[in-house]
Length: 120
Image (cartoon, rainbow, N blue to C red; front, side):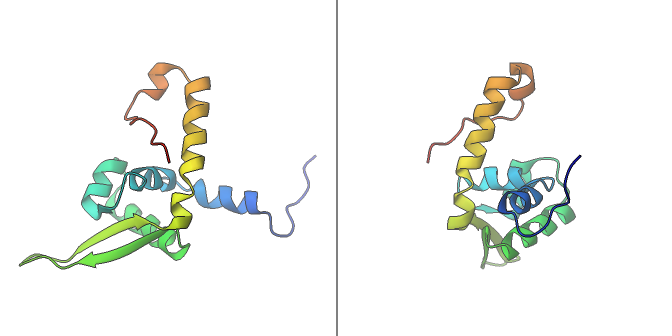
């Protein structure tokens, strides 16, 4: 029988943040460098614009990503997203997930849309 969760547990809280759909995909995409909204949407794949906007705002409020606006000649301003130092620290989490996936999932399950793991 489990016990009720009481008090602050950093693991519990971190899992709560990272389990949100698309969060780790966003982090993984930004580990390769800053991206504009459309470029990020393509890199993440399958996430609708409203959900992506919500996730980006949440990650920004947590201090994991930064957003800046680039002025462009005669066009709408472009939002550019980048990981903060705290966000870049998630490289180890992504690497650990990759290591686990290679060890425990079949090739058919892991080869879809998988870029090589980046070394820090």
